[in-house]
Length: 196
Image (cartoon, rainbow, N blue to C red; front, side, top):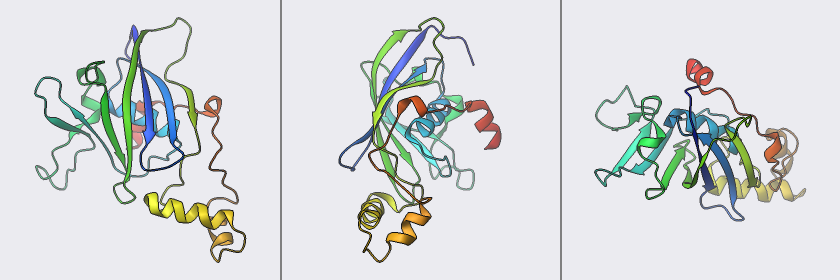
């Protein structure tokens, strides 16, 4: 990891779900958008099995920019900057704090990412870190917001025709209210990138 003297604190909210599913994390200012993607995946509880992209306003040009995984099969069709080449400090500022993060274009999960603070790095503190949050992340491939609502309805009602099947699919149990920030483990973004 590159050296850094400041830390960016982000609030991440999964949109269109009530009660809200959210996380608050701190990451090094030296992070790229790829590194931030990995930290969001780990903090939220996603498994990083699908495409993703960020959309943020360029503070210089005042136009939206998309950053993530470029589509090599369709160059020029989807103009997306490669996330591992773009530092978060280039776009995120306290005067330009808002971005949207899309994950799994099929299920269509959209997150609001808000830069809350830029603080000095604390000695002997390990970054990234998850400070707090609420509620469990939906299971992968559940079918987006609508599928997640149907899933929750089915697993709460033992008489629902899909109760057993969906509970088994989710690993035998699922508590939508459970989240413990102390249990979040962050992967090394460089190792994840090698797996890409």
